[in-house]
Image (cartoon, rainbow, N blue to C red; front, side):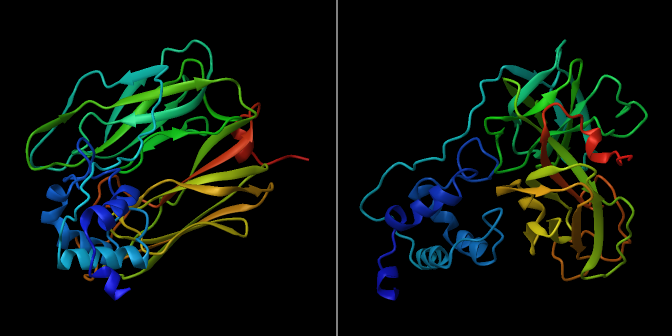
Amino acid sequence: MFAALLAVTFYADVLPILERRCLGCHQAGEVAPMALGTFAEARPFAKAMRDAVVSESMPPGGGLAAGEVAVLREWARRPVAGVAARAAVLPVRPEVRGDLVLRMAAPFPVGAGASVDYQHFVLPAGQNERRWIQAVEIRPGNRRVVHHAVAFLRTARSEFLRGGRLSVEDEVLGTYLPGEGVLRWPEGQAKLLPAGAEIVLQMHYTSTGQAEEDQTEVRLDFGPAPRERVYTMSVAQWEFAIPPFAPAHPVTAEFPVQTGVRVLAVTPHLHLRGRSMRVTAGETVVLDVPRYRFDWQLRRVLARPVPLASGETIRVEATFDNSRNNPRNPDPTATVRWGEQSWQEMMVAFVEVAIPAAWPPTEIYRPKRF
C-alpha cells in the first residue's frame, strides 16, 4: 500500500473521494466557504483537508474510510495534480417541481456583528383544500448566513406564535441543514398540508462579519393521496440544567406511542455543548451519534422502517460537555438551560413516523380507553 500511496495524485485519487463525500457542499453557490473541484482550488487547502478528515470534523455525518484518509494524508504531504486533468462530476442536486413556491415577503438583514435571535416568517399556503406533499425543499437565498431552518405546518386553529406553543396538529414539515437539500418521500407516503394551513419558517442566522441579507423560500411538490401519512414528532426534554464544568451531563426524554407506528427517520438536534445522542424505538437503536457536532445534525433515514406497537417507547439519551475541554463551549462556568441561541442548549430528536393516511396524529398521543 505504501508504494501505491507514493503515486497519489489529485485527479486520479483525491478527486474521486471529494466527488463522493465533499463536493455537495464544496462547490460554487453552496454553503462551504471554498470550492474543491479542481486541483487549483484544492491545492491551497491540502493540509486543512488532511487535518479535517483525521480529526473527523469533516465530512458531516461521519468519517471517511481508513484508506481514503490515507490518500488525503499522503496527498497533503506532496500535493500534485497528475496527468489526467478532468472536470469534477458534481453530485446531482435533487430537484422539486415547485408545485407551490412560498417565499419570505422581503429580504431579512443579517448584521455584521451581534447574534441574531431566531426569526419566524409566516408563509400562507393559500390552499382551500388539503393537499398531500410528496417533496419539500427549503432553499436559502444566502447560504452563508443560514445555519439551519425549520419549516413548521401551522393549522388554522393553532395557537403557535399566537400566544401559545406548537400543538399536536402542528408539525415539522422539513428542515434545511448544510449538506441536506430536498426531502422526498417514497411512493405511497406523503405529508399532509391541511386546508387553510400556513407554513412558519423558523430561521437561525449566523453573522459572517459583514452586512448580509437572506430571502429563503420553501418549494413543495404535491402528489396523490398516499397509503401512509408521514408525521414528524418532536421527542424533547425542556427541563434540564447542565452544571458548570460537567464533561458528560446526561439528559433523557421518553415518549410512549399510543398507537402502532413505523419509524422512518430521525434528526438529532443539540447545540454547541452536545456530545452524544442515542435514540431507541422499543428495543431497536435507530440513531447513535457518539461524537455529536453542531454542524452534523443531518436527517438519518432508516434502511428499514422500525415498527412500534401501542405502548412502546421512543427514548432519547443525550450527553452534554460543559467542560473546558470542549473547544466550542461558549462558557464552561455557566449553568445551561433550554434556549434558542447556540450558547444555550436544546435536546430534541425529530422522529418521522408513518401512520395510516386516514388517521389524525392525535392517535399517537391519545391514550386508548377500553
